[in-house]
Image (cartoon, rainbow, N blue to C red; front, side):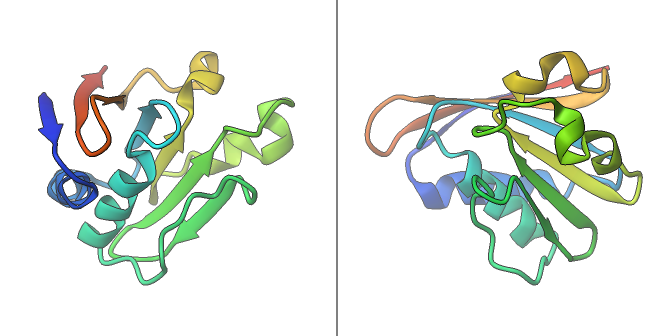
Length: 136
């Protein structure tokens, strides 16, 4: 699926819509440059899952957990230069939660085969191209 988002609000809405299709155990790998909409999209997913916490980029924490209809683990690998084992990588994969990974290219070899890849491209100041691909 390819779509164009004309605003941050559109990106959040797309996340809310996708949230309806998600189930516990799903893994979402997000790819895109800084400011491309990854966190806004995650905020939309969490909104669609009735998460009770404010969603923000876990750049310095590396992982944030958001309780909701289904718990979301939101991982940001931007600043991770060490082994993924150092952040408890294997423990993040849980059939009881949804895992969203920003900067997933840093974990390409460690991602599960069954996941949802989402690619964000900046077209201009407000417009983004968002491509969603399911792998098996």
